[in-house]
Image (cartoon, rainbow, N blue to C red; front, top):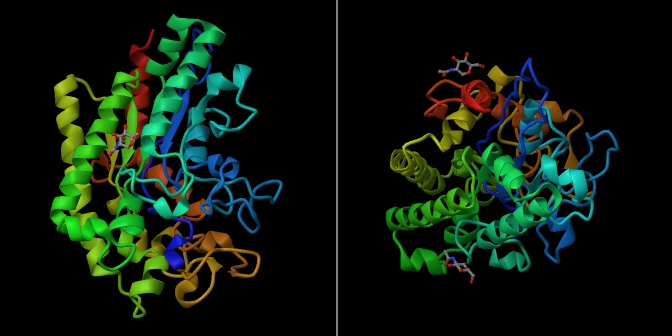
Length: 369
Ligand SMILES: *[C@@H]1O[C@H](CO)[C@@H](O)[C@H](O)[C@H]1NC(C)=O
Ligand SMILES: *[C@@H]1O[C@H](CO)[C@@H](O)[C@H](O)[C@H]1NC(C)=O
């Protein structure tokens, strides 16, 4: 079952940002919290009994140690580039035993490969950290932080933090479209399913706000029908799969609309949306403009487009990862992740709504006390 591979939605969006260091006081970088699926998992699934993990070579081949880290990348992933922009160390997986003491001040990564907005997404991966559980862990984290620095300071750290949430792709790829006549596709027509997902996603965002998050970067889904794994399964001709493309086309604008509605309700720009579809379309349609030789063939894999099955030691492996938009069948290469984060930081209103991450961070630096 090829899509039991690793999962994920696929390139998405993200955030990041440059934290200016104030001239009068050198503050620690703001804390960074990450929620979602394999696009942003820094290794939580290494601690779980699940098949959705990236803990074997050649994952991590372009890290300094050349060893797998649990990230679904040859090197850095999207959260890592955002951490760089914040001037921080990468976030540790919440389940890592190293996440204690001062490391808690950096933030934490709660993401888990295979999960979706819905609890029934990714059931084939058995033991993964579903969204409601990620949010419970965030509460638990805040209690541990308060034990370290006191309740008021813990609250301040959380409200000044940056949050990234990347989820939703799996609700299509590893749920609705996983098999023909899936339970959800018998229950909902696609447009109704999308509306249901958005209404459930809204509850997750409200919960994040209730838990103290005040700057939240929300990514949409990429062009789901164009990833190498879906081309291999559904489209031998290499044209993006129309059903999955339609899903992304319905979902992304409604996500932005929902986020704008929440910001209006709160009277503040709590949430910023990254239009990952636009961002990733840019390199799917024109890989050469970004220095890629292909956006259809994965660097690591086998079968058509290297999109079948998992990326393992036995797979084809491209010699130059920087020429590939996709590292494996679902996930961007390190270089593509860096380009996505650059768009999140510096993108025009086409890419980022209502503002880009640099602008948001600069505003906060001016108004924060
Ligand atoms: C997912 O499961 C949790 C725990 O059982 C439950 O509280 C939550 O409401 C469920 N979410 C959805 C969207 O069904
Ligand atoms: C986005 O960020 C850059 C700073 O890197 C800024 O100069 C630019 O004006 C912003 N773009 C928009 C459209 O807000």
